[in-house]
Image (cartoon, rainbow, N blue to C red):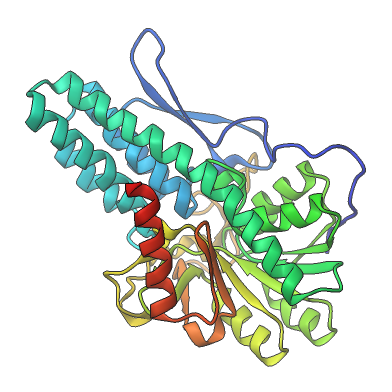
Length: 380
């Protein structure tokens, strides 16, 4: 179990390279991504010159995380428009690249709507492309602003629930600046607590099978001089039993209208453990992750990923031998069950923190009110 104590240096961005940015070199506009599959061993960038390259980057998890997928999807539509690809076809491919993460489709639709409106109004493909790019840039800015507001709301909630301070927080998967235009969702709350001197320990689940916690969250925590400890997912129960967890903070990839939360697989068992041990289980996500068209958890499509992610281990800069490009850890031909997400029912969720405020208890009415507030702010 890796253990890292808090450093005394000033706070830093979790990475010196943005997770995503738009560039316009002489040879034409591109979308540049930090390849998250190569972290933490090396910081390598992918340059997407067409929508197909971005679709592959999304599917391979080179770019990931609900809020950032929305931003990437919007930029992907703009890339298609600027580069002269068929925009509607590109939008459909982008929106379907990962079915559970609702933000991806939201971002695609936003840029697509801007493109359609400008094209219908002006008849000029160049103006339509500029409109799509403007929509993507606006979404990128809004996501960064939402991250800061979620962090403030989340820290206030932690202080209310845990007035003694010295928070020991358990998190799952990765929810920092690698998934956001800002400093993230759940990780941003922990980071705010760290900066305020109120984070005693960040417990980091490895998050198997792709180790987003070990590779990415630990990477971000280390870069921010946070006190963190890495653990295997199946060690979380012993932490709860020992009274070492004060709160659980996770993100979300889709929140149904009734408050059911789809997040990285392994989140639901944490919710069960938290309920049994009377520990707050807090979800942090932007309002765009709430999907009013999905009525309940049973209606959420859960992405099923390739079995080789379970039967093989992939690590940057390590020679590979398996059919999926990794190191085999199971006999050849082993069948694997590999859902990317699980669904936590609303009754196990203490609160959902958004940029518009907190829903607690988690009900359909409370979520609808937050969404309505967000629409009012957007309109004004």
